[in-house]
Amino acid sequence: MDVEVGSVVQGKVSGITNFGVFVDMGEATGMVHISEVARNYVKDLKEYVHMGQEVMVKVISISPEGKISLSMKQAEEPKEREERRPYKREREKAQVSRGADSFEFRPKQQESLSFEDMLSKFKQTSDEKLSGMKKSDGNRRTAQSRRKPQ
Image 1: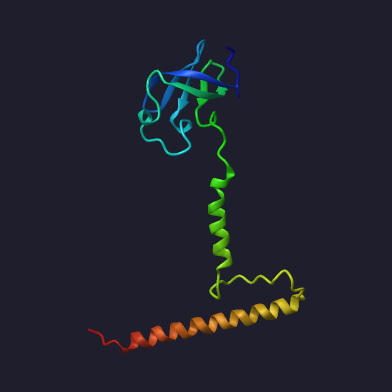
Image 2: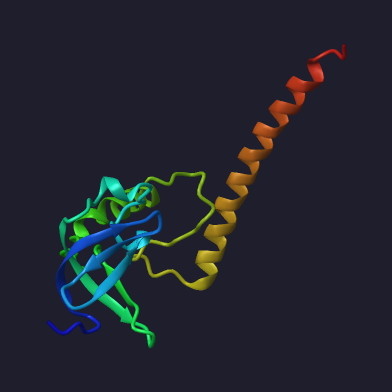
């Protein structure tokens, strides 16, 4: 069995340290760094592998000195992109649910407004928001002025 960069091979765990796992692949031994064991954070390697366990590893690199770097997480089947989409959907919902508190002005795609029309609409919304902020700020100041110093 010839070990080449990029190949996925089966091996047997021959050693476990606090920084990685050594895997015997027959004619060669390589190391899987702790960051390449699983897709999530690994605190204790003994929770993921044990001595003598058969594992699939991908050869990441071979140094000029002959050290072989391996990865267990890259040897796994790639995760479907569906897992990442919920976060994207939540982000899109947040953008859609922005209300009057949003300071971004985006004209609707259907409207074909001139630059002057867009600018006047932006100024109007901006003035409305500023007046709303001034009202709420004024209410706070009057409430604070009513308090007596102690």
